Image (cartoon, rainbow, N blue to C red; front, side, top):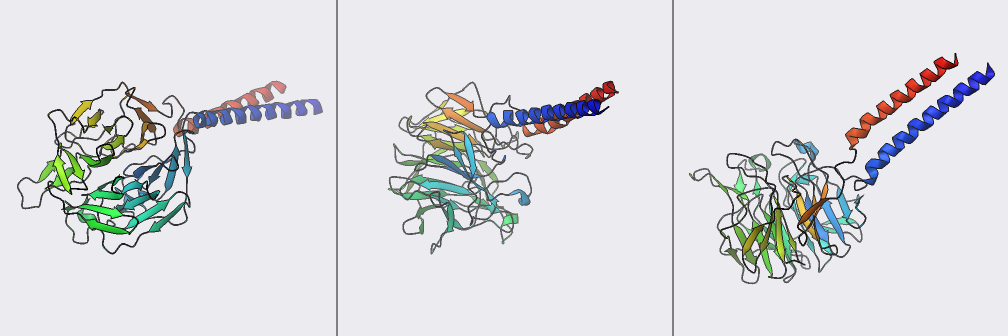
Amino acid sequence: MTKIKYKNKLLIFYAIFIMTNLLYATINISADCAPTPYSPAKAGHSMAYDSANDLIIVYGGHIGSGTENRRYDTRAYDYNKNEWTNLNPTVKPNASSWLAMAYDSESEKLILFGGVPKDGYALAETWIYDYSTNSWIKADPNASPSLRGSHVMAYDSESDVVIMHGGAVWAEDNPAGVYINYNDTWAYDFNSDTWTNMEPTGLDVGLSESQMTYDSESDKIIMVGGYFVYPYDDPQEEYYATETWAYDYNTNTWENITTTIHPSHRVDHALAYDSESDRTILVGGHKILGDYNLQDETWAFDYNTETWENMNPSTKPVRIAHQMAYDEESDLVILFGGLNSSGISTFYNEVYTYDYNNNNWTLMSSELCPTKTDYIFVFPIISLFSILAVIVILRREK
């Protein structure tokens, strides 16, 4: 009788041991084929490449439709290690989405402005992030752009200023209770903590949900797409942009350089400048005029020849409200996050890289990997089989 009990205990121990190892292996499979630790799936975040530290920095965004789902986490993605780090600084900006951020390479600082917060109206705050000290500091300029979200920013390295354009404030985020589109262009100088309203010539429509990047070879800011709501008494009502614009800080002018072949009208797309190939890369977004179609195209723009090319790669990320940045060290465009529809149903935490030279997108975490949902269900299944095995063994012992 003693021997039987001892054998029973040994068999139970083996069953538990097998169950534990299977569970550990299942979790490890997910960990091995996805960037670790996972960054939360999100959209409407801000993102920029920190060239001094060779890292992609992501701030804010939202993980659901309600304002309570807006985030304030600061995370870094290291392409070389395929790894995310939650930086978790002590002080941080408000939890918000539809904000804009640009990296000032001369000062080695990230400049963030505006956004739609978790509580209250849209913001008009300027924040500075320093990776070396892992700290956010709220700037205190004498003048600043007004509160807004869905604006765009890019750093002009030749002039050492951050350029910001447009954006909007929605009625529910505006103390005045009306929708406002902005047609202003501002420049921020980190060294003097100064915003300057440039009041440029050439652009007569303020856009929100457009995208902007800096073409360092041509020393031009490139802006594509976007959305505009005319004043309520204007019969045109809404405008969806197809234009490609170039801003020259030195002459303070916007130039319309739209060509015959170009991306269709769209919003919530992503844009990044590949300095090695001297191309502006555009991907994704959606049309609003009657169809809400998500776009799977990847376009490349050459400012020197003023030509757009539909690259048509074999893999095509399809999403909106994602962000992109160019990793100079690796010569790759990095894409992160986004949504699968304007109805806010599925959020992505995937990282894609785009190599212009080979014209291919690479998903950094394999689609064949188990997801969190997979191994949530795997655990009970393994447990059930282990328990059944123990019951069968015990019944045979009797």
